[in-house]
Structure formats: C-alpha cells, structure tokens
Length: 111
Length: 114
Image 1 (cartoon, chains in turn cyan, purple):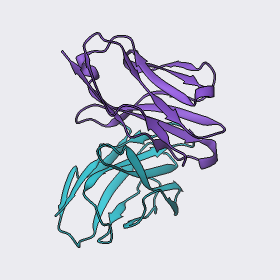
Image 2: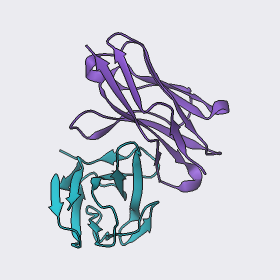
Image 3: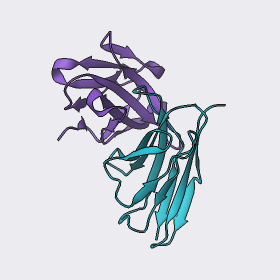
C-alpha cells in the first residue's frame, strides 16, 4: 500500500542535541518536502528536493539540514542551532506541480 | 509580500449549517489551488484542487470551491456541515513562478456542534 511514512511519531530530545527525523515514500515521486506546522501559522516550508542529490532551502531553513541520497528517502536533521525546535514536522512528496501527499507527522519536543 | 490568507482562524457551526471558508492569495500568473483537511489525529489530506477549466470544483465529502480569478480567491463551501467535518482546513497555492512549492494559509479550525 503506497504512501509516506514518518518515524517516530513522537520524539523527545534535550536542548543542544541534534535529532534526525525520518521520511520514506514508495509513491515513486521525484519531489519531497519538509514542513513545520505551528498553531495558527499553517505549514511553513523548511527544505525541498526535486531530484535525488539536490535540495533547496525553503522559507525557514535556518537550523535544519537535509540529504537526498535515495529517491525514497528525505531525512531532516534538526540541529542545536534551531532556536525553537519544538513543533510538528510534516513530510510530503509530489510529482511536478500536482498535489502533495503527506505523511502522518512527527511531533518533536525539545526540553 | 506574496501570501495566502485565510480569513477566519476559528469557526463554530451547528450541524446542518452552511459553511464558507475564505481564501485569498496574492500571486499573479498561473496558479494551482488546493484545499487540504486535517481531521483530528489524521494525516493532512487533499479535499479538492483546481488546475484549470471549470472554476467551480467539487471535492470529497460534499465540499466544493470556486476560483474567482478577478478576486484572487478560492473559497471553500459546503451546504450542510456534519459533526464529522470538525477539522482544520488549509488553503494552499502553487504559483508557476515558484515551481513545485506550495504556500499554505494559516488554517481554519472548524468545530461543528452536534
């Protein structure tokens, strides 16, 4: 059954630690995206990748890093430089300018 | 700044009431328009989309939206809401000049009272 998986669902980290969020898709989509969702702010784009081994910064890339070594996978690292990392993180994929398909999200809490 | 605006952050309706959620965008040129819905505890999922053609588009669960180019609007409507429509609704715009990127509105939380 095709879709996007994100793991884990909940993640807790201490301030100052880097943490990597997983995103895998089996939809054979070329493009993948990471968003951050905060109450009252909608979804804001962190990074996106339109093809393997290439990615671009979104609107709020500071304190985050990504890699795209395989078409199916687009992990996001939240670094200790991210000033306010506690949030709900959503991964999505698409082909071209068609609709994006979303994963279930990872809720990250940093204390 | 180019953006997507959703006019109401919280809407409370009784069952069977009619719904209209506003969405305006500020991009020129060719746009693709979307409404997504996030039910409590579930994935964000597509409700409906507009790429071209008939500006009145119908989506799942009785929802529809009308693209009015002159008003830069893509309002979401449903004639009679149900308790199960309680969710957060997001308008999103893909402008041709920005490639594949989607820009989302801030979202509208709809609560339907039974």
